[in-house]
View (spheres, rainbow, N blue to C red):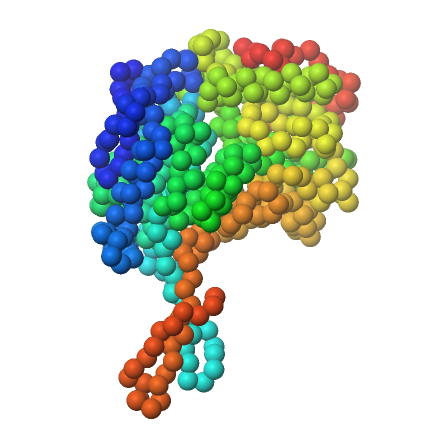
Length: 523
């Protein structure tokens, strides 16, 4: 366990550095509400120090581009460093999981899985580092047109609190593999694991300045990072509203932005699906990380003929769920903060006032500290498509069910925000078009690599393996072959370029007295 007196500094130039202001922020354990550490309160001056360190690592003295100790590191060597980093993370997995569990309230099993996923991302991008190939393009006789892939330079990364290790892995390691130097601003609610990961990166061989972490408030350090003119690309994962502000700040200095924004992803279940096999998947997609997942499948759309059956089985599963302290390793841990807990309470009160049906509710275990940020998981039934639970991508441990007719599946799935649609059917002709109609798409890779917004307001640029392409500028070059001198002189010029319900339940029988939705129920 971390000690209450432990103070954490910024990580710049491979060193622990105090913030210019000397101020700190408390770190609260969501399981018991107690302060157990302090983090540095970085601000604009600290972000500027980090950006200058990254620029020096990339450009060196600035006399020529990519001449710094990291900028001139060849791709194969970058891959070797990432591979060593993966091994260090794997060896340190238990420590990282313990830190993450204390910091975020995540059950230990989920924290271990996140550390494992981080190592896997490092492995993946280690292998990809020397495979960023350019292209040759057919052109007129006597010419060769080619494209060269180059790193952006210094990239900024704003990491959210719900999956700090995983999102660091798929964002920062991709940028480093492509040759960029990085400045990272982790969420103030969850940054301790990333400080440890940065230390491991230095051990793996990252030169000073290649990776820099500035902790602090989003309104201070995060805004300063998005606004900094020395940043060549910004990556942000978080809410649509904050993503809009990040994009506006970066636009002031014409900086490209990658946004991965929270969604309200649908899970489509057709009557011919294997419901018993689908149930664990449906429930896990809803309650993982206490529902605090931007791609949580918390909107379940069920074909009308199977709706009562599926809802009854889901209700049985939800009633058996238990929330408790992170290290108890139950179905759910606490929510990440008191602020997030209050947001969930407000949402449930709104749902109750709107007359929505509470079909089932789990419980918070008796031994959970009363000061912890707990909320039992809740299942809502018959949620109208236009109602807030069916539209907003807020993070909470709850789900809403809606019946659908087969012809309406595509339309019901088309909501304002959706990151990760799923479908259950044995008929690929039925399932594929329905899922394709939702504003998101699947691709090859491990589960966390797949969760990407693709249309509307879920993202502006591609993620996952595609990030390697979006993180380099394409520079076109036109090679003119000089026939008169045997081609010896060539010229390069820039070119454009759980159990089954006993039977179907009626709506009336589903309505039963539950604990007040504005407070956690306890078993």
